[in-house]
Image 1 (cartoon, rainbow, N blue to C red):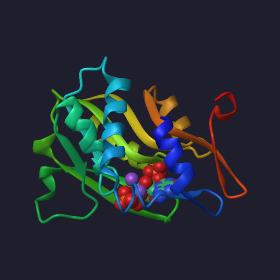
Image 2 (image 1 turned 120 degrees about the vertical axis):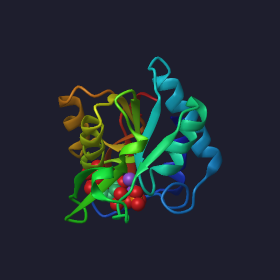
Image 3 (image 1 turned 90 degrees about the horizontal axis):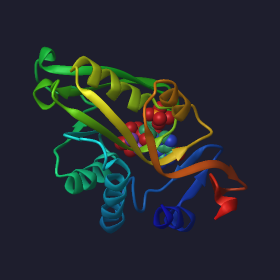
Length: 194
Ligand code: G4P
Ligand code: NA
Ligand code: NA
């Protein structure tokens, strides 16, 4: 998605070896217009699927997920990372290991918001090692719902997530695909052909 790639080039900051800071339009301050265009793009990419629900994880997945939900006209559910006071047996839970932070967190979704009738599109801000998406997939399995695809705002193809999802036969569509960071600059997949 050209508009997103331009924005990453202009406003993204490469931190160290493998992290892109995009806190002025996605991870802290949010650009609603850009988010809306992302929602339209996710809809274009998955319009042949019968989607009944969009799942994401708090917090940064929520903005793009809600915009996609607006265009698809389906509800959006975000998995919570913090334990709620609700009884555990009302929740689907999964463990998500963060390689970045080297901690394991639990994500959960209330059973009342996901059923075996649901056809789910997962949306998330980053695809790095794929652990968040895998956690959501475990929850979708537990609910006996159907995963239709995964939509990612920014994919880093040099980390393990894409391969993991490909091996599981999951359709993944990313709006921007970064193949490397070189001298503090972002290099997109297929950039040479543009
Ligand atoms: P994974 O789900 O692909 O395995 O991701 P990983 O554990 O590597 O990343 C943990 C957190 O860091 C996630 O956010 C993920 O979205 C984010 N992340 C991964 N790579 C990048 C990057 O290059 N830039 C930025 N800005 N974030 C990245 P989170 O902890 O769930 O936080 P949030 O959703 O509240 O923002
Ligand atoms: Na994030
Ligand atoms: Na995230």
